[in-house]
Image 1: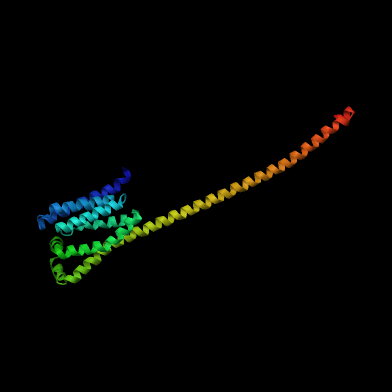
Image 2: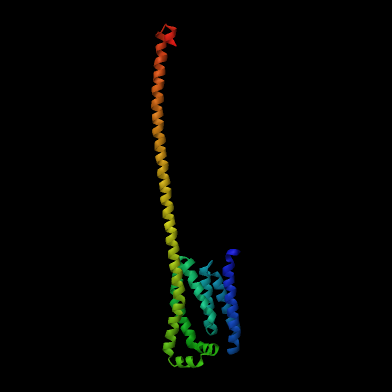
Length: 234
């Protein structure tokens, strides 16, 4: 249970932040609470599963994104937690999860740009208080969408690449440790072989010495039958 504590804390933190954001969003754009809460719960669950079940976390993220598109829910800042899932997929995911998550990055960025173009501009304008600045930016619609794609891609690509780099580093370290262990085992095997050779050589030497001594004893014993003098017999 202690091992899962960081994951649970992360999921709860994302959930709390998301619910606070939804409460503010509902005041600005009424009627979004149900869909938004479901999306927030999805991202919170995905964040909690990113380390232990990255594949399932990726599925949950895409389900939340699909819900967002179907319900036309505006973008939520809490969705930046998807960076945790991107990192988890690259760091702990299987090869299939790694590839699918990598291919998902440009698709997710394009989806974010689509949501931005469909009305989330107004949400961010009211939520962040950047009315004048975003009013100017909205006049350059294509540039705004392109910027959204770029920023969304970077927000996912950077943690994904970080997870991939850490994955490669850990694997290289494990490979190095395995190589050192194999070299140590090879050295031990060579030492055992050397000791066995010494034992065999020692056994041959003892055999030669004992065999020579037994031959002398046998010759002396056989010659005793030809001796009549008790002193010489002793």
